[in-house]
Image 1: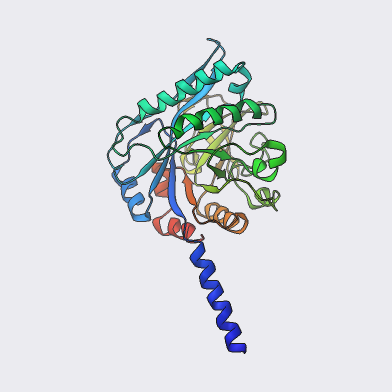
Image 2 (image 1 turned 180 degrees about the vertical axis):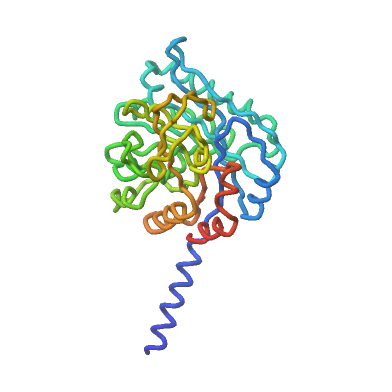
Length: 341
């Protein structure tokens, strides 16, 4: 009887594993020029990456013109894209919805965004497999944003393209408060969880204590994919206030440079007014460098594996594909992260 009991549990375990196939692998690309280098192509191929979520453009309210405008449109070089599914991502600022005052204006916005995506995707031989909207909506903008998603989804359905939306941790934790977007899938963003404006914050991108504070999570009425952090930035402070983020800045860039003095771990003072990454820094400005390398990336994967509900299909993506990422995290380490699932 004991032997039969053990065999029964073994069979159940096999059936459970059979119902949860390994997830599909993806990367995000967040630069205005999509042109994969040979090293990036090799890394994607060796990791078995089948999908690339690529930011096509931003949408924001422009104070000077009094209009909602597209910004930072992508330019696409198709080399290396033939074997990849491409998902256009459109980032829309939350303040945009404060300036959509009628259904006619909303429909016009849907029309412009739909055709801009279509025009930018013209060079792609394989077309696009999905469209994703990235917006950190709140209770005040929820109604207009969700109406926009419904209208865009109806437009995309005519050409058989699904619509997805990004989901922040607080939106996953409190769906009764924030609502659930009317889309086919949600992409859980497992980063940007700390207080980036607090100088004392060590890593606002990701930390186990910060994400663990959200657990446990309720049932969510959308299939959830997940994107994990593998990036670095500098947080610039001036006279005690956070001024801006300097993307893809790493500690190694500042160490040994006479213009910057390391005053604490990952923290620097500007010794002489200068330019850095296209931004002008004043003497006395402070920089905190935040990085998500292999340890943080794997910790995020383990958190997602523990808390996400089981699914017959799931995309696991890494944010974001960049030359510094290829140098900072090895092929073996990335394989180790994907193996968590």
